[in-house]
Length: 260
Image 1 (cartoon, one colour):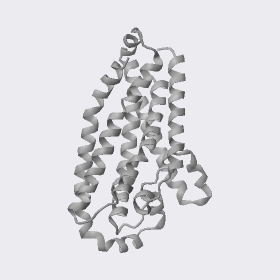
Image 2 (cartoon, rainbow, N blue to C red):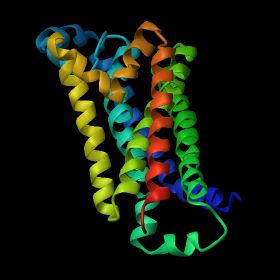
Image 3 (cartoon, one colour):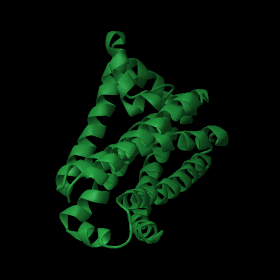
Image 4 (cartoon, rainbow, N blue to C red):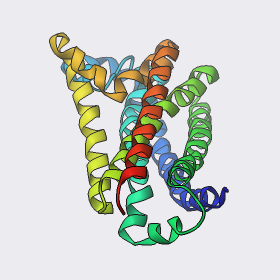
């Protein structure tokens, strides 16, 4: 039975397209800025304290790879898109429970496990839309200003981000099955993702507290290392994939045992 998957997938199209359009507008702004300020980037790097660059994983701002990694990916992708996935996932179950639609859905011959899995699977829509549209926009934007990206590095930046985004969605999913009120579930999920991102950034500044960041998903996805240094942390992607599976398992366990 895939009716839930089809229905939920249809709901995700509009938001995914809007997010891709927002990214396109932002990319036009940043790409138009780069040629004019490229020569001043060295002075900019010397003027700001080093911890700011560690916090946001900023390197080589004078290159198009370093500039886009810092200005777009380190904030828009790693934080805002992650929050979007957590926000959407937090409403997958809680919204139906809050509106009493879940009672009607579970009165049909479908298991709770199937309901949850199909709803999560519908996240393929934003994953595909964003991870296809965004690299195309970035690549063409660079060409438009006389720059270029290594297409393999750019593709790997998005491919390796999928497990990271799924973990953020998993955080939202667990919140969705634990909390009945959809606003509370969404608020909890996006707050957790933001706090985890902030903790990882702060812990990376001080070596004495770097171990704390090991429990944060953003520790295992470094867009700057991929774009600037072409380092592909496949093991880290595997860790995130396992973490996502664990979060889904927890969500299934809680959802199948709770009263609605």
